[in-house]
Amino acid sequence: MREIVLDTETTGLSPQDGHRLVELGCIELFNHMATGKFFHTYLDPERDMPAGAEKIHGLTASFLSGKPKFADKVEDFLAFIGDDPLVIHNASFDMGFINAELARIGRPALPMARAIDTLDIARRRFPGAQNNLDALCRRFNVDNSGREKHGALLDSELLAEVYLELMGGRQPGLVLQAEIEAARASGTDAVKPQARPRPEPLAPRLTAAERDAHDAFVGALRGEALWKASTN
Image (cartoon, rainbow, N blue to C red; front, side, top):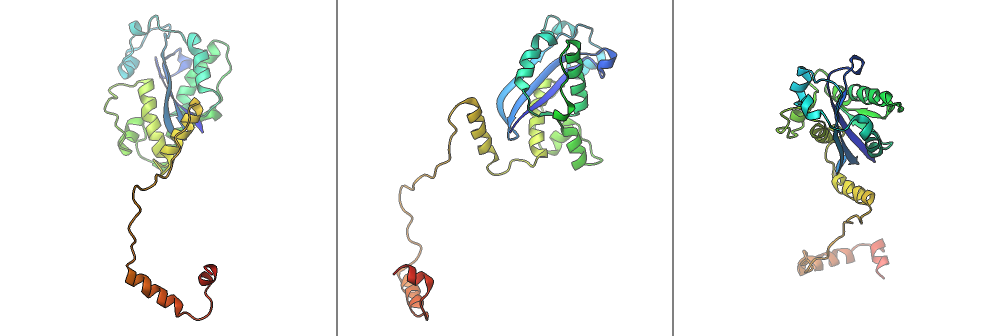
């Protein structure tokens, strides 16, 4: 099961007010586990950077000037996400900005039905609690010490770990299955678990006296026991 964890950074809160995307970060998951494949780009918003937004993500207008425009990266972005579900924290925000950028260049919108909103999941699981990404990292002991400012790729990495916990955590066999699926997807041979023979056979646990006592007990049973018949 392939899913894409996605996050964005922007110049503000609403594309209807003329705000634009400035960063896109995506991480590929198989069975809720990161495969190591990702997509990331900074984007030139072709406008100024408000001080409030810069304080959140630290991206300045001078840094973004000359970076690719959304139209330059849209094919790579759409190829990476494919038709797979998109795991997003507060999906309406990120999807709204992405679809506004797609509309700007005459491309069809991504349907909201593709989005798995981890904020909605967290609110259902922990009603009344703080459910922003930092709070969920603290709840699930996900190390977010490197998150001094927001960043699309870093936040996608953190969200991937939070999403795993929201979906039930690391269950037995989940990690191995994810590795197998990822290997299949990359065209390499998956590592198959194999039982390794013991270098020396285990010593018998029954003593000779215990075995003789058991044989005497079985021999004293009346009738023909099924296990006695099977050995004849």
